[in-house]
Length: 393
Image (cartoon, rainbow, N blue to C red; front, top):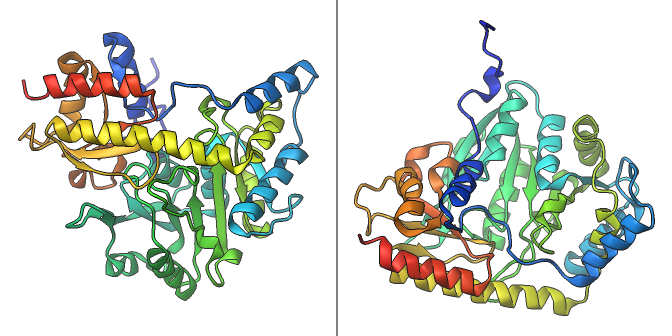
């Protein structure tokens, strides 16, 4: 029997992701899965048809290492169209296996052992794991609800988090799991710190098109002097209901893209050959598609938020993304979100995700739980009905 521990010490304590555990509970109990953030409807027919056409026309072997030329051009066109950002598709864009690989490539390609990364918590769970794999350390800055229920950070906390070891700030806007959209003033504060301390900003913008109530996404790279030090990550899975395709990308100045590409090439190398030209079709869809996507999702958000409040939760209305966060303490005075989520499928037939897994300091999120609204209205309404009936028992 092997005497030594197989798992690297860098990943000690990470274990299986919470999404695997909760999705398995959903299957086991037949519960409605409002935990993991994937839609239950397919994307636009034009995009799906383009993938089928690519498969049938022989686009089934390795694509170029940088990504299919038509997709890189489509990404450049998209950034110009929506944000006025100019990119050279031959040197400033690389296609990845989803945003998760883009993050891994960026962090592994840029960080050395002992470096520090400023992160806003709560955060998507792969952030801490990728930072740990690079031998670096995550330094958290707390996002917490203000008196109006909007998640904010203290600029003094951000400045205090930066030391001589800090190399980059990892930003996620629109933000998972809180649904926060960082304002221009907040972005300006982050940019000011980055410029003062000569930091790189890696920004995860996968929810860039899923904003509610006429809010606008402002890429931090568009702020003065920030383009040269910002690496932008996005993907098509959330925008085109194709999360299983795992097509993402990094874009930005050549030195930052090259750093991410150098690590990325030893991860998957390439992926998703027939899905890349299909994603290019999606990025070129007319404004009406993007507007309709938001309108449908906002209606779903309203159904979910209204139902969660009716069930007795303190509910923080998301400004964007797939997710709504609740404080469970009005219905469960113990405030133990992990135990609450593990019992919820049997009690109510609904699956959610405990937010403590998104925090570097779990105590800040112990009482919080995340529900997803990226489902058909009838599914959301059925889940809400179960919650209203069951959580008070």
